[in-house]
Length: 464
Image 1 (cartoon, rainbow, N blue to C red):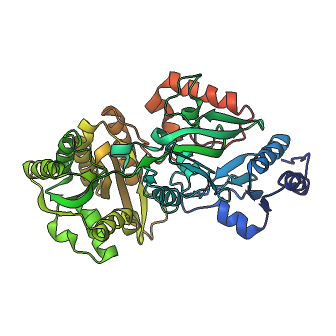
Image 2: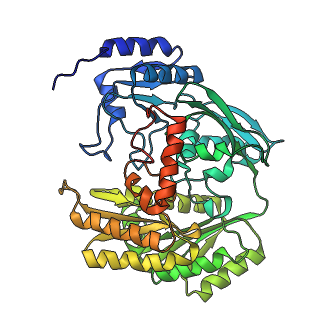
Image 3: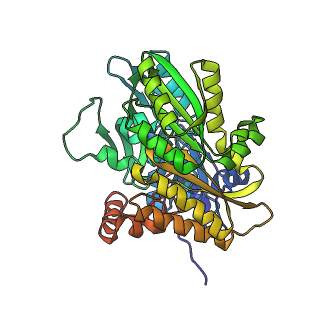
């Protein structure tokens, strides 16, 4: 069918470039290919963007949205483009709006225990800057060295320290957001308590760029704890026993900063990747940390590990050895992914249901003859089963799809969520009705329509 376009691409791009004063507009094929596509996209999802824009300030963001409204063009927000759920990949003919060059730490206030940052500031860089002032930024996603605070906020990223310090949402005080209609609004503020008006700050945290573009964020900083950081590893016969031990540690009053679980398959993959030899212990591995330990807390921890039949317990206060253990956990994904197709999932369970879920994942793998690596943030009930299959198989096996469906349904049956910290993107947006229920699903769409009536912001993401 013949389509008579009202405007040519050249006319659209000329108007766009007029609106972006300080940033850069890219239209070359190489840049568009790189920023539009990732290995997560399927042919049905993919599309070459019309332009990739690196905004330098909020005026550039407003300009992009002005052009998008004028020509009814989708805007795909990107920060550091580390999403794992097809949350920032290109849509055909869209504008990809990147905030990664908006990367200034505007302020670190020790007196107010906060920092004000632009969205492109790398999580780890903010933490390093805060530590120079005797403070630290608590959220600790596995992508800490490469992900931006803006993307962390947009997806409500979690991480290894969530067990003690909460996810990104628990560490945000306020933000500035440019809405689809071009208004820049200020939400929240600098106070630790806020009770005035509806809590719109938290509405935008985790909204995945579907309601507005985050241009500035005010986050909590915490004082570096006194005491001796203590870290260690312990081994259990299986993940179920580990989960039971973790549940006891979690409510012991020790307040661990990290309780990370890795199954035997994951340990073997890490041994290959790192050149370590932890696999000789077999079973499941727990990596734990207390960032402000005392002799009493260490004794309670050791007693609980002994009670729940942990083996080969190793504890260290050496900073170098602790850094090696943290690196081991951060290298988990590249170790598993190396040389094979994979899908990693992100369910979060009520703490009392983590052990039953571990059992169920094993049953699914055996039933469908699939190799499933299981690891995750055991301290907050967040489990990451990763299903792998041979690289030469270009199509996702039906058994993999069936396994995901079974695990998702079981998660919801146990009172959990199928998206603990990686967001929804396009991979799970059809599960809104199943997890949230029809009434809440409808309200989600009403909220979207209120903030983005033209439907130009990150379409098909978060909610379908």
